[in-house]
Image (cartoon, rainbow, N blue to C red; front, side):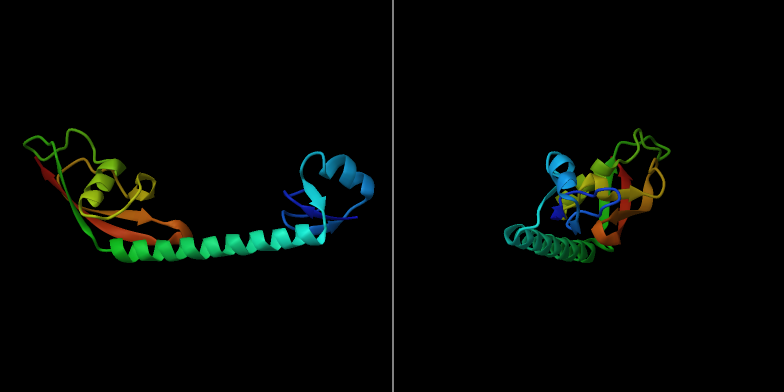
Length: 147
């Protein structure tokens, strides 16, 4: 019996594969646990359409990441934070602070994308990396000033 696997099945195949299994294995194991469906023409067409949709979405996400990197790379953000007379900050600059400064300049960014090479705990100029899907990275210059 030909079955389309809905999830990875150890020893049989991976999600989306069409495999040949015994009738009993399909009816007693794969179907009840929602691991597979019969390989009908309709099911095969549905799987192909789903694969095409996933491919289009990944291409779209890749394009969005490239555009974001082109927009952000080399951008300079200025942060005004509370600091003592020596230039030491009362609290380290966080990802949320960088995102807020980016939004004030009209740049969209999420906190989970911001990566610090080292904690920013004093005033000065620093470099921060914004990571995106597909391994794309943009370097941001951060200027930290005392309020």
